Length: 260
Image (tube, rainbow, N blue to C red; front, side, top):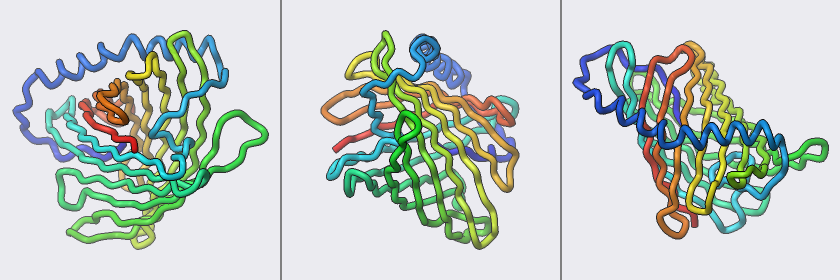
């Protein structure tokens, strides 16, 4: 996931088919998302066996991991400008309670990039259901003028599973701060994910992405998506992106995930 300010308005020539494609994605996952919200209301926090492969609170098993790629194609609903972002995400289980990872991405601009290596630790919860994990990372990010800045990441994740009439599901919350000591800037991020697996080959997710940046207004985006398993440990994902607070963007996200 990546939130950022849209580039300056520019003519894009992007066809109306782009919006139609986004609408098709929403139609494909909308019914599942509605069932998911209804199931949450009915089932509450009934614990299940859900274990999403890319949820912060669920660590990788020792010797297991995943490799994920994604591409976002965004468009401003007001000015019709467009931009993209490519992401690489890796996790590997070092021990049952320690996961090593890499979170990297590159936008259209030369200085719009980041690469952060992190460690995620399992934390015991005795007073509430679910799983808790803490995260610490370090890396670098692009800065204006073609410069590079160090970045320090801290994070906290909580998640729990539940059962619904449509299959097992999960909810996960990821809270993170990315600090740039050199410029004393701090970005605060909160991601909330609701997911359900109606069958072993399909995942439906509804994600809320929030970011409070030191240089930009607070932004919130919504992303419904569907993932399909096409082979042993290989998934394809298609989703929509909608700005819902201080954000006029609309877009598509496509990606793949390989579990090993």
